[in-house]
Figure 1 (tube, rainbow, N blue to C red):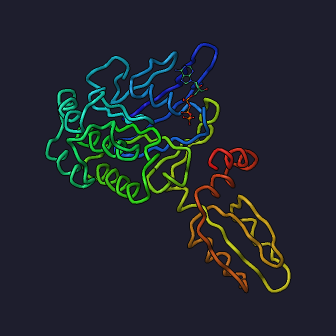
Figure 2 (figure 1 turned 30 degrees about the vertical axis):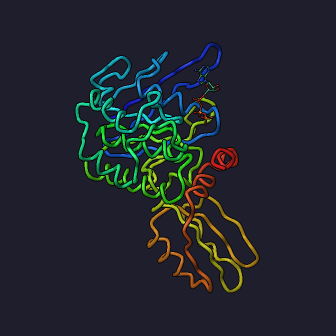
Figure 3 (figure 1 turned 135 degrees about the vertical axis):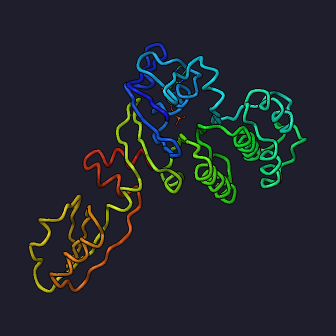
Length: 298
Ligand SMILES: Nc1ncnc2c1ncn2[C@@H]1O[C@H](COP(=O)(O)OP(=O)(O)OP(=O)(O)O)[C@@H](O)[C@H]1O
């Protein structure tokens, strides 16, 4: 669906995106994380066809995006400062987009306006930042895009609205296989939404992960034995191990049931398997550069 291959983009001397490749399958939600200036917005603008790549290629459905109106009509991009025509109401913006997007859905527009309790006849610039963002979501989803590109979409939304927006996005993905690329500074903000996560740092992609695999595959175990610790750990794939008093804490990769039945053979006096946050997984997975990632995710 989305294919970004060895892409570079510079601004004068500054290389904003350096040799980045990502692929996003139809119906997936890809979270692009990174600190300020990492190159996230530049990458999203390359995908939206706002910038031309200096090298590499950016394609959707096998076709280049830049200067390609057929593909652009299938993309909706909500920028970090959503764009509206000056003095326009939500309804007037809807008419504007209706002329651009052939799959624009009036029924959906009315439905979403009702869900958000949006005053569609009010001028958008008079709305607060959060309400303007809600208006952008209503317009974006009514355009029925195949690809939705979101730059810091939760910025300015209160917790109730975040939940509402997330569930609407998940519904669109489930019902009609919309594909989403979403940027954020904050892993916790998007971890329940994304199937894949890519972390950018100084223009480069430093880590990419499939979240489903990660969450089912990585566990924290706490274990204690009577007397000394038997040498049971060798066959386990351990990312991290530390001793706190008589308790051994390990971060282990593998199937939860297999790990449990293996450890239980050695009759531990304490044995717990605890859930890990995604942030912890990233930090343990990345070893030495985990600390750098901790700052990025912070
Ligand atoms: N139009 C531009 N002209 C010159 N430099 C630019 C331009 N756009 C981005 N840059 C530079 O490219 C680098 C990457 O910026 P970008 O906005 O893509 O980062 P980001 O990851 O989105 O950051 P943030 O999280 O702060 O929004 C930065 O050093 C920025 O100063």
